Image (tube, rainbow, N blue to C red; front, side, top):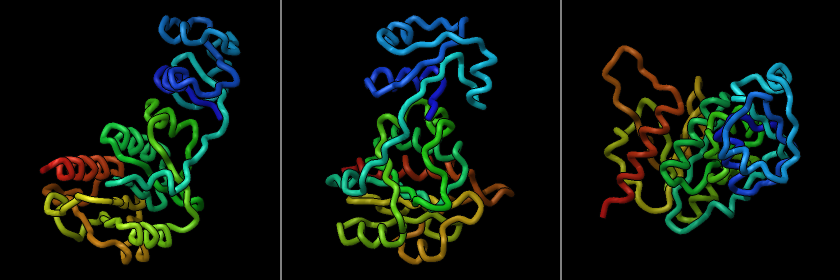
Length: 230
């Protein structure tokens, strides 16, 4: 897998993650990164070569790394954990943005399904701006079974939908899993049925829905605020 962009590659270098090759533009100049590239397998190439390797803005640097290694579900189950479950999210840009929000908010981990869902790609890594190196992500076979298992472990499950309790009125303390639905369809009916609470964001404008990553950010930070209250 390729990761690209200054922040993504720098974060990987700082964490001393295994990097197979680094491709640099002949015009690349970033002293801090270049210092970290000592003993790396660096190839100097022209910009056209980099443009052919990835579709996004590579900023003159691409690193070839091993495929992302997902965490096990058990690794996410810390005391007083705050988890985010993504119910078949499809857009890698939304996924990357949610990872960045989760890292900033101190979320303990993210859970995604293995099928019919975006997984960790170079685009996701790029949009996360390196935050993915600090967030555990688990892939599970069945979201509903996972939610039931989390309940057995003492978690409250909070879903998100337009028709629910205003998000600021919910108690997010304790072991918590927040479910963010698909960009177009929202949560599946079975997932929604297995939620303990449904949080909604009141709308005052003519548009009655928000981008998935924006909605996630609003509720995640409300939950963090509520969890930090004595």
